[in-house]
Amino acid sequence: MNINGIGMTSQRTRMRMIDRLREKGIKDEAVLAAVFAVPRHLFVDEALASRAYDDVSLPINFNQTISQPYIVARMIEVLRNAQPLGRVLEIGTGCGYQAAVLAQIATEVYSVERIAPLYERARKQLRELKLRNVSVRHADGCAGLPDIAPFDGIIMAAAAPALLPALREQLKVGGRMVLPVGMNEQHLYLIERDAHGFRETKLEAVKFVPLLMGKA
Ligand code: SAH
Image (cartoon, helix red, strand yellow):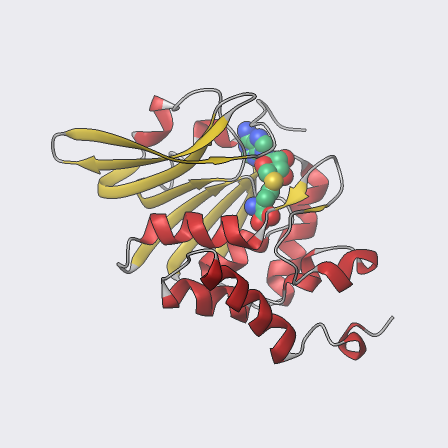
């Protein structure tokens, strides 16, 4: 199938998705521009490409999903807080979609995936898109990346059972972390680090796949 022939790359299809995100409350123009710039259809199977610009999560392999565009936009909006983003860590690369959106906004993106074939595929996809400021690693993200830390931002694409105090130590002072927390009931949390310590803010209810331990 010629993917260019089915209208997926058309400006109109993508702009409709951006309009949806605005309606749902995304205000940060830099985030909206970043979502607009990333060809989401290249991150899903061809059979699902016609739904790539709907605001829904879709299955990828290994029981995982590509995140809903609204959630990607919302998390990056909270992470960025209308300020430039320097070095960012993403935990849970999956297909690499959110990493590609982050790459439009942050100076450096490090993304960690525990499932080897997903890691391989995401790396290849991001390389084909010539996103040279993204580096993908096959590792257990629960440990963060001590050799690259500290980060201006940390974003998690899988739900942790608790707030992960070890990870937040890898934030710079002034840094922000956005993560889903909870088992059956999950909420997004924002963690901000300042000179005195950490401040936690509970945000909206969400639904993510669980954070798992170890490499696979
Ligand atoms: N960021 C993706 C969403 C991926 S879904 C997107 O843009 O659509 C969440 C991913 O987190 C899955 O691929 C899962 O394998 C991964 N994951 C879960 N626990 C992990 C861990 N401890 N370390 C690294 N990746 C993890």
